[in-house]
Length: 416
Image (tube, rainbow, N blue to C red; front, side, top):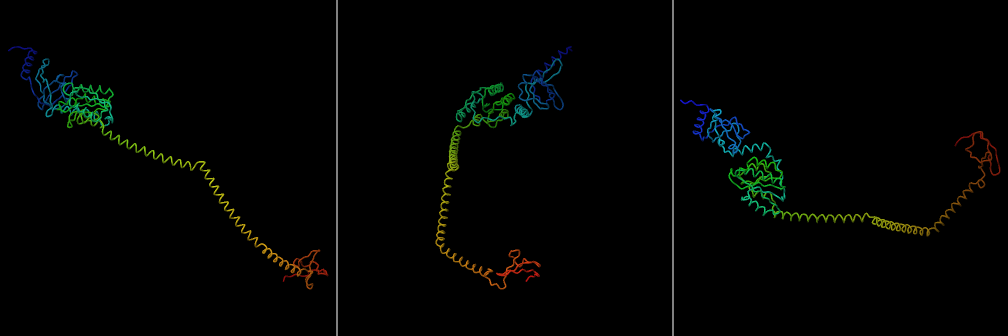
């Protein structure tokens, strides 16, 4: 038996293993995954009874469409190799596919969940699209049918538009880098809107728009971005991140650009409404001016003076009428008095004469000189005529008639 060194033995084992297992497909569960700084990925593939080490070197790892996760069940396409320094064998992975699910579908779901959790899809961060854009950038393939569809719609709907085309790869290796760089460049150029687009295709054809670097570029852009990729049934990561998703490239232009014919009709309508409002304003202003003019005339000094003049004239007329009425009445009364005065004077004189005669008769009848002397005398005291009522018991008084004076004394006094 030949004696071998450890290295020689490992070399023979390595040769035997790599020749016998130059290509294997192995299904198992991922465990103890390590993403090395070099870009290599180290992990263990296991099932319920056994485990084997595996490595995926950077060149193959960069082609992975999804992220390896602990516990994920996968199918590995690779070869058995021996690492001579340690004498351990492992699977050198060429490609990895999720078990029971396509790699692209899994990668799509993983990235979608990651970006959603990071707020990339949040409605509140969506930017408002301008109502009347003047400059837009189309980030698409210059040779694709999608570009021609968009230009045709723009020409039909809204010619007052400046369009710049950023020609990029829209599928295949390097497409996502080109798209992301074009977005970053156009974002700095002061456009109103960026449209990222391409026509329909398989999930592999559209995959560049599912790449994280494209999502990052859209998310970081300060310019509103429209994602118009594929057909209506296709939903890409770019659709979720963009400020607006269009089902097709041509639909993006229809959603973004106003229709010139509709604008003209709208302008006509606005013009009609404006004319009506101006006419109404003029009418209202005219009415208000007339009202103010009338009010000014009514409240002006000249109007007030005129009103006072008219008021004075009316008062003067009423005063003249009243004076004339009073004068007429007094004149009539005076004439009536003048006509009745002689008769009245005569009647009053006759009455007065009769009264005078009566008074003279009474005077004569009551004067002591003319009265009958019997039983009548005049009482006096200290040369003054007094009444009998003023005398008291013991008073001395004089009783005189026409020819005789008698001195008397009151002896008694009583009422009758």
